[in-house]
Length: 184
Image 1 (cartoon, one colour):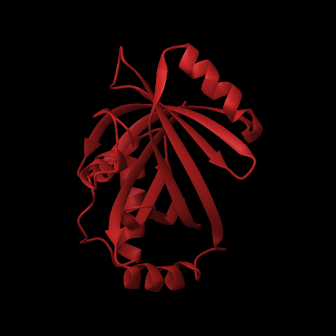
Image 2 (cartoon, helix red, strand yellow):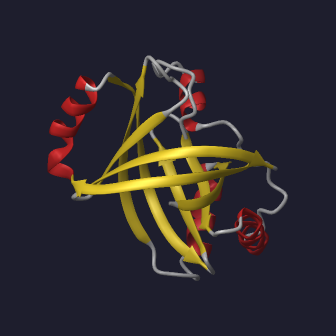
Image 3 (tube, helix red, strand yellow):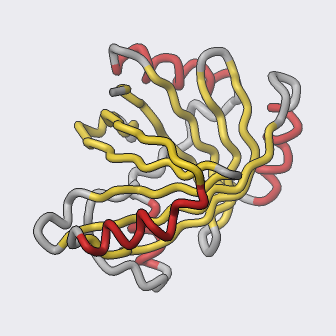
């Protein structure tokens, strides 16, 4: 199980372009597309499983959201990796177990490594561009400090962090999100 610290900041198209140019000076840019399906049960709508399809991989994630601190989300994660071709069978298994698909989120973008922080420039379908920063440490405060250091280096230390989950932002846009649960 990993303790993950993460945050996000909404970006304009111009900010995304400038930041992308700046980040290319830190590490090799890796393009990606991630399709996330969130499954919930009627019994506990505050817990969700995320099924992420990325390239040939299907990653099932359960996050235990411990707390939020200054706009930083602190989670314990458990993940299992499968071949993406198994998505249909796993989806059927989840439905048989009482889960239902609450919503889907598509992320396209670029990832970079700045110091020990994973930095992603992501475009979320129907929401626009975001800067996401993620760090994994045994001590959450070290993760928060690492992210703050990178934000300062990128001149984003004074920007407001987005504390709403993507499902909340999508729901506000009328995207048909079915439940108010602890999605990320």
